[in-house]
Every structure is written in C-alpha cells, then in structure tokens.
Image (tube, rainbow, N blue to C red; front, side, top):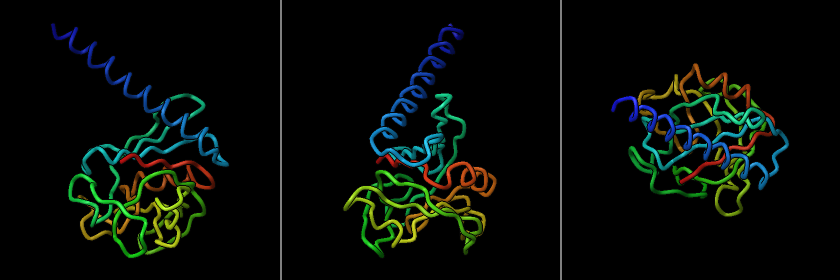
Length: 173
C-alpha cells in the first residue's frame, strides 16, 4: 500500500513540475524576453513560508531551484491578497517582469526588474521593486517588503547571477 501511495505522490509532483515548466515556456513565448535560458515563476497562491519561487531551466525543462520568497507588507500576512501598481502602496504586484541591471544597495547585491504589464506592474522600476537578500531585514525569518522579491542570502546571489540581464519573471496571484 505505501509503495502505491509513494508512486502516486511522485507522479503527482512530476505532473505539477511539468505543468509549471509548460506554463513557464508559454509565458516566455508570450513575453519574448531577451534572455531565453531561465524563467522565474513566483506563485503567490502559496503561503510565504513555503517554496513558491521556482527557477526553471527552459533548455532542460527542469525546475533547478526552489525557494521561499517575500511579498509586500500591505499585501497580506501569510498569503498575499491585496495587490497594487501604485507608487507608495507598499503592496506586491503581479504579472510579467524582465530582469535588468544589478547593484549593491541597503540589502546587498540586488537586481532591478521592469514590469511589462501596463497598469498592473509597469511602475515596478519607479517603485524600486527588486530582488534582494533577506539578510539585513528586520525579520529575515518572516520577510515582508514594500514590494520586493527577497530571498535568503545563500539563494539571492546564485539566483541573481543566473537571471540578471533580461530573464522573464512571472508572478502568479
């Protein structure tokens, strides 16, 4: 019986991974980013303290990195429920982003993103929504931001170096 349950669970997880990879591939075709190797999917339908950031290698059709990722302080507690594109809203936004340049800021090594959906996230650069580390945040174990995508310090460096310069980031809500 337990072997059947384990096989069923593995099949279920494989199907989820395939669906996510297929979704990433479709979004990459839709948005046509300059860099085609990786797509980041952030699934805000999942709670904060679970893996909800997925780095997908489009060439190998595999999820190569999973991580927790923050959402904004006024978007909700564990689950993000309230989204905004307004400057000063302190809420997360969703949709498609393209990664841009890196810099060193208040939270260390960071990556700028540009929102690609008019009225949904196109103020991302003006709002200073970026990828950064949770290391210097007030509560790195429960990181709430003003809209940024914060990951643990060990993930942040690796992730940014892989996706900088034109990769697609797609946020599901």
